[in-house]
Length: 118
Image (cartoon, rainbow, N blue to C red):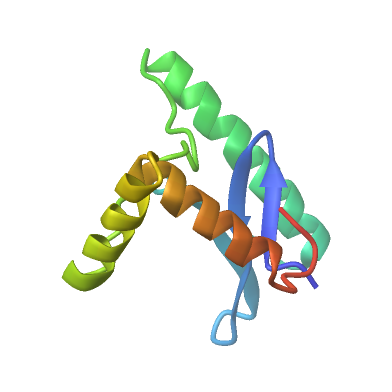
């Protein structure tokens, strides 16, 4: 079972409210708050797609750029010792820290059994 929906490059969560007996979610990885809900899986997926379309249309109507999820950069705070080790590793090999971190992350994720990719 997937816990993330995808449409037009946007990702949405899937949650269940036992109190309301409704499925709901929000667009993930953007700053704006965009939510949706449905009574079953099919209606939730449709509501998610409509929420993405509505969000894009609203941004266009307001003359502003829609947030783009997962732009390709993020801050990492590994702690002083790990930062030092990674920087020295990169320097000794003539690399930059970004390529060392990207390579380590790629190797880690490629070695994991993560199931279907997004």
